[in-house]
Image 1 (cartoon, rainbow, N blue to C red):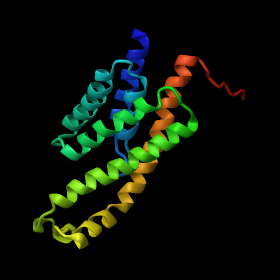
Image 2 (image 1 turned 90 degrees about the horizontal axis):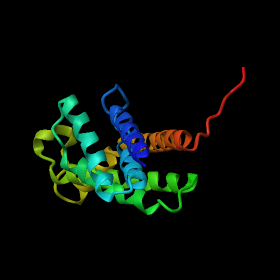
Image 3 (image 1 turned 60 degrees about the vertical axis):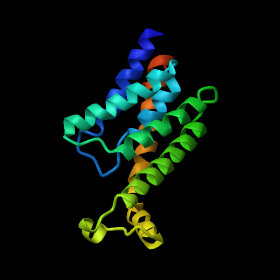
Length: 174
């Protein structure tokens, strides 16, 4: 059990590293780390603490100041992993990853909209319905990257964990 916890921790740190290396905007493992933590940490407090700290450490290394909407999204995605614990399948991972991407998009862009100011220039989204629509419309390209990143990292990190713990390695003969 202790070895599996260390393995999950290592995989989450690998996922957090995706924020540090060069990558397309929003193509990171934030959603996957959150889902993985919820799914595999038996102790719920670890499911919340470890992914949170992994992203915080990556932000500190990058020199970013923590953005409340990103951390709030992360904490709201973790229960999605907890809910699929007893029914894990390719489809449940796919569905959960999609839902996590949508949640992240809705939460972070809502915060962008409510914190928008005229100093944002052409990205200013006034505090009305038109500004609300503008904010979410401008964010659509980032949503695609978030969705692709979540899907890629969910299947990569879950696959890595399952291959190592179940010893299901595929060898290709050349």
